Image (cartoon, rainbow over all chains, first blue to last red; front, side, top):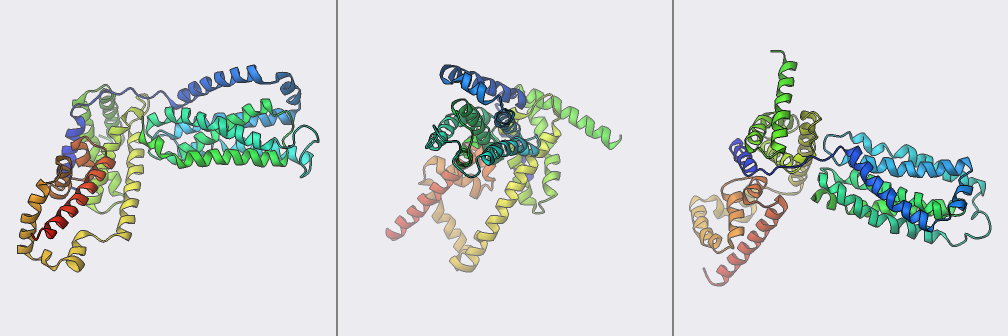
Amino acid sequence: MEKGNTEQLIESLSRGLAPVRPLLPPARRALLWLGAVALLFGVIVLSFADLAAFAARFAAPRMALEAAAILLTGITAVIAAFHLSLPDRSTLWRYAPLPPLALWIATSGLGCLQYGLGLGPPGDRTGDSPHCFAFIVGVSVPLTVLLYAVLRRARPLDPLPVALTAALGVAALAAFVLQFFHHFDVTAIDLVVHMAAVLCVVAIAGASRRVLAAGG
Amino acid sequence: MAPETQLQLQEASWVVLMRAAQGGDARSYDQLLRSVSPFIRNLVRRYCRDPDLAEDVVQDVLLTVHRVRHTWDPQRPFSPWLASIAARRGIDRIRRASRVARHEVSDEIAIETFAAPAANNESGALHAAETIAPLLAALPERQRRALEAVKIRGLSVAQAASESGQSVAALKVTMHRAVKALRNLVGADKDGGV
């Protein structure tokens, strides 16, 4: 195309220019979103969870470390998604959630080793894995919709990493809330089911990434 | 003046213009886009030697800048934001162009080699123009304007989209429908013995 056409394009873009409000910095937007979700989750947990059982379970350092790693995965992934949605932020943000994710898998894996490859301690837990899967996916999907609604305002130029980190973030937050209703140690089967649920959410979000690019 | 100082002055001027543009100042925005175009062109030409394609990419970058102008934080430098958009859009477009080049044959080659020997003949071309004019006139106005802008006036799809107030995707759909409608009209004419 010719330069003359570029001149005409500039004229047409400038004509009737509408003012825009710049987006808030990504970390602040992420914290606002996380704050709103924490409020929602707080109400649910305080209303329905057995907090005494949760406190007793997480008195063990490994369990506390596992819960912290899950929460950290969720928080860093959501913050990363907000950064990645902007054109001038480092693409290295896509790797930010990986260290806490590795810690999550490692601490859960350690728990599994305590029971060998068995199904875990005997008693009240057989058959709960499908519920865990449904919980993580069921909580993550509406949360992803809420997060997409905010992220798409940036009209990301490369929506795939934004979608993937956002999905990992919401799935990890859902897995964290699950800890309040999961009154038994994680077994090998649980770990596989939790990770399968996270991957399922990430796959759904990845497939719907074009929603982000469309903008809002 | 030292090149560093010149760059700093340029950056400072872009920051002032972009802040005003975010506030809706059309004159500052016009000035900014004219000022950044050579910068974008230089960036794009580093990895795109075809001048036509490079200018198409420049226009695409300008459209993207317009679409995401609210994502620039007035507290941050402007050049890295612009350079990042230019690099991403440029790489996307050049990849797409090379994909198309691998899988498609350009119209001129197709017409010369396969389709219609008469198309290489000047009188044939004149006859084609006479035939196409009433067919174009029979199209719905939106479709006719889209085809005329891109195929006759030679605008890029991005520019034609901006001119008509449509998105690039919507303009492509309109053009696709226009070509389909033309094909049907040509078929109807042939059936009618024209």
